[in-house]
Image (cartoon, rainbow, N blue to C red; front, side):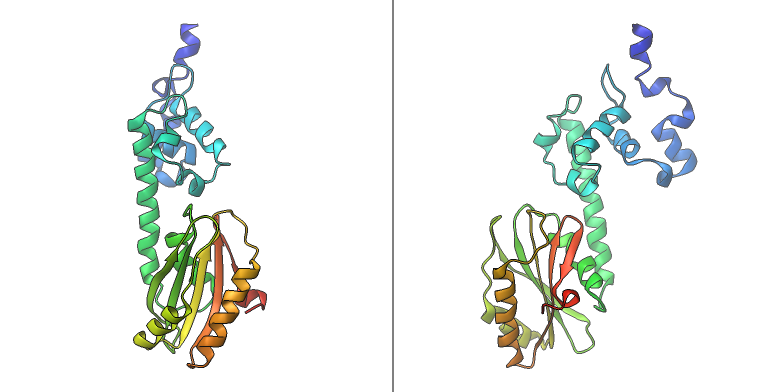
Length: 232
């Protein structure tokens, strides 16, 4: 029995199979998600290795790191073998990854497609548990001059002030606007309210020679573009 329990310890694995040694010898890119998380938590329990524990945690979120990043410390601690220290390590590492991606968006200064807009906005609102409405203001070269949160609401929706959107556009000298909001529910289907709001903003902005270029809905690492769908 003791021999069987000992086999769960990473210390008893071949060096080539140990996550830390593998990272040093071969680089981080060769490690699986479970192995990377195993390095963060350091150890498993008497009944499973750190890698097996990590696999169990990943399986609970369908092996989606974005979903894992949404789990709170308390939610992570519900897994047997994960105490506060290990939960904090996981949460901190995933937050670092999110901030790294956010910094990369600063390089996107010109929007040439809906995907560019998605890459700019996803780190900001793509994984939030509540709904937010954001505006991206562009100049006549489609370069981003400003991006801002317009409203923040509950899971059911947000309230958007059309006058505030256009006033800020005029103050910035923007000639193009991209609308964006997230659907925490995960659905990408535009609601009737989404379409009505887009039309309302489009009509109001046209009177000021400001063009609504797109409206993006973001959810779970995906997006839908009103412009791409021809419903703008």
